[in-house]
Image (cartoon, rainbow, N blue to C red):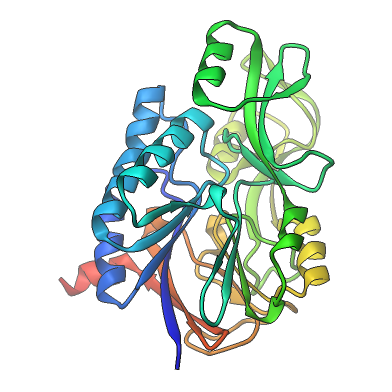
Length: 331
């Protein structure tokens, strides 16, 4: 019987050193490979500090020896993350940049990767279903798009002041090229598809929504803008018109794409409030350790110690939630 065990980590926002403990425990618990599913980088005050943050994580993964597939989520920037993953994927043969391959075929299943996020938290890796092709883009001062081929071109454009931004875009419809056997396909995406159950589903988020236009620190904030919950609570203290909401915030276009392709297995992160939840395509809870044909799993928020192992057995899957705090208590 063919069996593969993937350790899965995402959402390291506070201290990169937690990766060392996570890798140690995942290996002890039988993980053979590693899926690094976004938010291992961000803006940490300067380009040097941002690169150092991600470099520590990737260097630790390289030294672990685990075969690792790494992709960005909603916080990674092009220079803070892109240059770093390029360097470490060349330094360590066990690290693969998932933005460069899209699909990995195993004996009894395939992994399909959709990098980036539909909602940017300062990150520059995005996905959607617009007419844009998957590529790297410069944004001119007039808002026009142009492609770039190398980091030097991007850096020169910033230094010359001829662009106001840049991003890498992934068209979600590219998945149609790679999903040939949906029953044996597992989508790895930082973001979750939309569900409709607050009690059980993996895409529940708490956030602050702006109820009308206002100014904060002399900058206009538009109605409908959202803040992560900790930031929202701080903004509310200023008297701003922000309301705390709790909703299923998964991506509706992703839901339609998955249903159209027959995708019934996906692993994600992103929404910290729903870490370690798992459900089927109808929103019903899936028991930990149960071998199933349908599984949408939020593997958790590593800052608070949440990680886990996805086991694939003859095309079916099961999950195991791991909380690092439990192992620290044992020690």
